[in-house]
Length: 320
Picture (tube, rainbow, N blue to C red):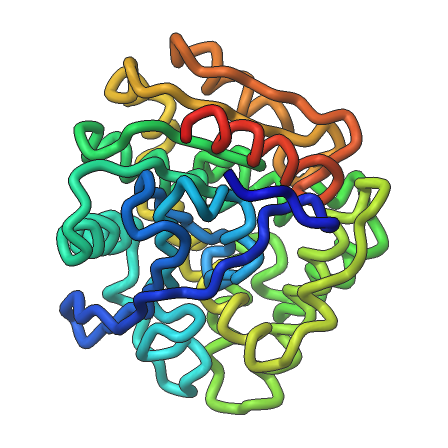
């Protein structure tokens, strides 16, 4: 068993396998495997949509006991085509496509069953995948719980204006006046695909600035998206607004409605008390409808940070 590093995570072992997997529709996914080649398989589903995989997430698993699979979802990170491309077509990027991609990667790697870990959007995707393929999932470790409902994206794009009124007015005023009372994610999505690169870049920055704002109440919160590379901002904002403006390609309340498909799968749900952008009620409702799930509420944490990593590691250690 490996020892925890000074940063509270396991040492990040370098990938011993990596590649590009063609999944159809002109898409190729970057993937990598680290840890013990004979260890317990686990797949990490990154957030966003569009954040891309992070080497830091390898440290959420004991490298002596886990075979850790990371990959970049369609149009994100090192997968191609990139959402940074000026004329990228996102029409073949839906929740259903991503669920199929996870299965294709599992088959490609010769894995029978695996633990699924996800954070934020990665939770929504993990729930959708596990409900479609429950026989392939050994456990679920889900942090910063989301379920993709429009009521939650409306909360972020509109209702949060009651918490941050000045910052929300700037966010709202980033779209043409005729669109300010409608679907703000859809309005931003149109700007993010505008032929003028300056219009795209400005919209991406304003979207990321608002994202940083509504995730800022945790004690250790610091800006991240709004200070990121402009190319990353564009890809991230394009993918988030694409999914949100389409209701994450899910029926309303679908993942809660179909939670019985997960009964019998051990799960740990981890959520921060300060997560105002993703209220605790979503995790609570899921936990109440899911016998055998465990809900861990962190009193020092928002939509990440604080003791979130320690709570995830406690869960993966237990399931190892």
